[in-house]
Length: 260
Image (cartoon, rainbow, N blue to C red):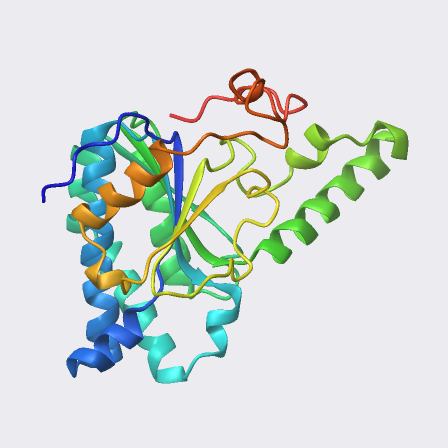
């Protein structure tokens, strides 16, 4: 049966793209091929978000812990990353009016890769069709620690008192500070955990777990997940009577920010 387009779409979708290696083993492919097929799946999801009007998509591409994987696999991931960031590849997104941002600690990446990331961000900075946030060498705990360090630096410079530290002030230093928190997080691959992803930002995020390995997570599966989101009533810690009022202001210390 054909999956209908959902009536209510999230503003910000985050995806933990899990299962590339297991998909490769299942089909007799190399790990490298599994990650390549995963990149293709990501392109399809970006295209659907653009077509359907989902303004923000965050993709967990490489975690802080992924450096612990076998060196051969890490090298192939870095090579794939470079390949995706080639000018002709990025020009496709640029022509579609897609803005690309990277979040995470870039220090461990090669100089070449860091330069490419900056160029991609600069090239697409004024695009308004949608924003794709790529979390690379990112971890939720890293995000909290780096935010705390920056906040302490400001507190020292400007004599900020502990009583003046608010949710809004702390949020200002997190990696996704300029964007609204994700409404919806999808994790593929059958695992049911967050794996150190967006720990601060997921306070009221709706979670969806798919048994599909990421390379098999096609647009039909994505629509299925969005239909599930559309059927939920978000309460933000309140009750059904005031849920609609809280939906726009459950974290009202956080001011509205442009994100397109």
